[in-house]
Amino acid sequence: ETYTAMLSVRRALGSEGRLLRRLRAYLREESARLRRLARFYEKVQALHQDPKASVDNPLLAFSLIKRLHSDWPNVIYSDEATENTQALHAGFKEVEQELPGAEDLDGAARALMRLQDVYALSVKGMANGVFQPAGASRPPLYSPGRRVSLSADDCFHVGKVAYDTGDYYHSIAWLEEAVSLFRLSYGSWNPEDRSSLEDALDHLAFSYFMAGNISHALSLSKEFLHYDPSNRRVARNVAKYEKLLETGMAASAGPLRRPNGTRLQSRDAYEELCQRPGGQPSPEQIPRLSCSYETNGSPYLLLQPAKKEVVRIRPYVALYHDFISDAEAETIKGLAGPWLQRSVVASGEKQQKAEYRISKSAWLKDTADPVVRVLELRIAAVTGLDLRPPYAEYLQVVNYGLGGHYEPHFDHATSRKSPLYRMKSGNRIATVMIYLSAVEAGGSTAFIHANFSVPVVKNAALFWWNLRRNGDGDGDTLHAGCPVLAGDKWVANKWIHEHGQEFRRPCSTDPRD
Ligand SMILES: O=C(O)CCC(=O)C(=O)O
Ligand SMILES: [Fe+2]
Image (cartoon, rainbow, N blue to C red; front, side, top):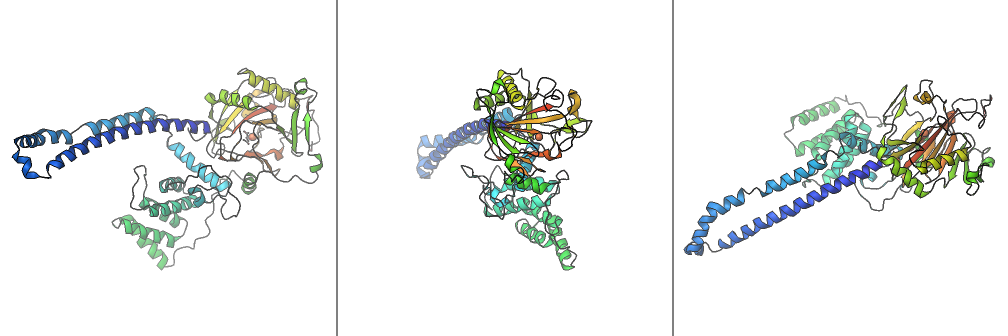
C-alpha cells in the first residue's frame, strides 16, 4: 500500500523518477528517428522541385529506381519505432511491481473527500489548488508554496470512486468539477486521460437522477447526446426523464446530505475541533492550568527538567515541550521506517485494518537502539511510572498517510476480550504520545468529549490518564488524530499498563478521581 504512509508516498516519487528517465530516453531516440525521417523527406522533396531534370540525368534516374526499390521500403518498414517502444515498455515493466495499485487510487480519492468533509473545503477550491473552507470568509487552512490544480480527469476519478459506492453527495460535487473542466478543454486530447467529457456527463447525469434531481439529469443527458447522438442508452434516459417531468412523477429533490458512517456519533464536534485547534477550558479549571519545570525527584531530570504545560485538569492532559531532540526524532523514524506496516485496530478479540485509522506503524523494543532505551528512561522519569516489561508496551511509531487520521477512539480496552489483555498486565492506564514531526496543516489531536484539541507541536510529548483511579475507563479521554491536511505526521506512542503502578498511582474508590 502506498497511500497509508507518507514514507511510502515519498518512495512512489522515486518510482516516478525512474519512469521519467525512461520517457526522456524514449523521447530522445524518437526525436532522432524523426529527424532522420525528415532528412530523407527533405532530400527527396528537393529532387521533386524539378521533376524533368531528375530523370534526364542517368545518375538521378538510377537513384530514383534504387530509392523506390530499396530506400522507401527500408524507411517505411524500419523497426526503429518498434524497438524504441519496446525499450519503453521494458523500462515500465521493471518498475511496475512497485507502482500504486487500484486500492491506492481509491484510498487517495477517499483521502481527498475526507479532507473536503472534515475541513469543510470547497471542491472547486481544491480542484483549483486552494484549501479554502466552503462558503466562509476564513483564510485558507493551508497555502502551498506552489499552487497546483487538478485536471478534469483527476476530478472524474475522485467522483467515480464516490459514484461506485452509491455516494452521490460526493460524486456530484467532483463530477461537476470534472464536467466544467472538460468543457473548457473540449477538443484537445491528453494521452494520460482515461475519461472524457461524455463520461463525466454520463456519470453526473445519473448521480443527479439518483439524487432525485431529474431536470439536471435531463439537461446533462441532452448535452451528452449533442456530443454522441448515437448513444441509445442515453437517448432512452432522456425520454424517461422527460416523461417523469411531464407526468409530474419526479419527486422533488431535497438537499443532498453527506453520507454518515455510523461509527461517528459526534461528527460535528470532532470536525470543529480539527478545523480550529484549541478550545476554552472551563472556568473552574483555569486557575489550575500551569507551566512548570519538573524534576519529579529524579536524577535524570535534575540537569534538564521537563517543561510541563498542563492543558486540562479533567481529563488530566499535559504537554511536555522539547521532550526529545530533533536528532532523536530522526533516529526513531529511521529505525521504524523499514518495519512500517498498515496500522490495525482492535475488533473484538482480533486486530484488523480499518478505514477509520489510516497510517502505518512499527513497534520498537528498547533494545533496538540506545536512543529508544534513553527515551524510555525519560518517560519513566517524567511520569514516575514503571515501564519495565510487562508494565508497558513497546514503543509504537506511527507514520500517517495521505489524509491519514485516527477517528475518535479510546486507547484503553473497553471490552474484557480485548487483545490488550494478552500482556496480562491489566488495561492501559496512561498514554504518552510524542510528536516526532511537525505538519504543515491539520493533524491535531482532538479530545472530543472534553472539547479541546492540541495542535501538533514537534518534539513535544502529550500525556494523559486513560483510566480513573478506580480502574474504570475515563470516557472523557475519547480522542482522535485529525486528518493530516498537508505534511508528514509521525508520532510515537508509549502505552503504560495498570500493573506495576500500584504504589505510583494508588487506587481510589471515589469514581470521580
Ligand atoms: O496522532 C494523534 O494525534 C493521535 C494518535 C492516537 O490517538 C493513537 O495512535 O492512539
Ligand atoms: Fe489514541
